[in-house]
Length: 373
Image (tube, rainbow, N blue to C red):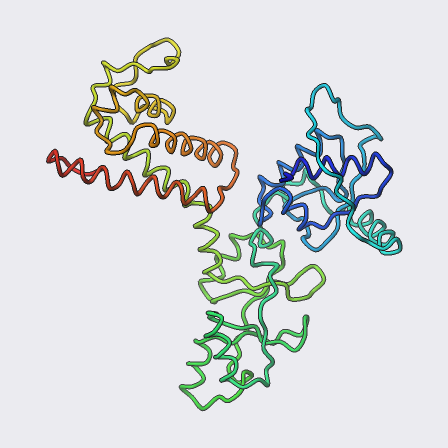
């Protein structure tokens, strides 16, 4: 399976063979395993571009257009020092199928646009509306003359709390929501969608995300206009909640796991008599007085020791549990030190470990008459 670096190495190979290279923004994102234009994606792809000696025009930033094209060229006509970088053999990936006249137009357009995007500009590093996946997912729309029953049926079948009302990509009339329908039904008998319109605020893709969140005190959604003026998305508090959950869930779960582990160790071991089985901390072979002073690596090394494991009393197989704990340590470093988001599968593995510890600590506290974590 090709990775992001593989994808860029194939681009470099094509460039060295004299082939023009244009790639859609969403293809670049997918190649690196991302679904959102997070800052860690920007940093990762730019590191690889620099290592390979490739220049992207316009530069890769959080403002990457998913349906736009980025061109690539060799930096100063040179590649990389092969002695300092280990290449991986990958199949030749053909360039995007673009007609020659269209490619020429794209090249000229992108070169003209390039000065507008500055990879060193802090504004391009800000978290904006375009960082939300929903910001470029064109919403379902209904016509103002559609029947109210038809619109409500679509909302129910698709589990939407509102629908965009429009007669074209740029001719947006507003939205219809359960609240707007209920309001109009208090004063009459609305029959068509146009009888129940609301007019939410509109924002651009470059609007700071925190400014948009503040708008939800007065509205239930905001409409997103693309750079060309077309409606390209809709953002609701539910979308913000999902994004918040995706960013914070790993931190909360890891915190709970560490709390359980420290509780087990504090109530079972006298740390003044415990020594790390691997390399000791600088200047001492002894651990701190309380588990709260231990690093995750130190917690792991204690539990890997069969003698300490038996005293701690976690009711699982030590080898399998320590494998899961080592995964947790790597996931922790991945999120907290490198800012790389976890996949849903990785989050689920963390959640399973937390659940297992929750059960074990409750059982241990009950059997020994202690208090839970």
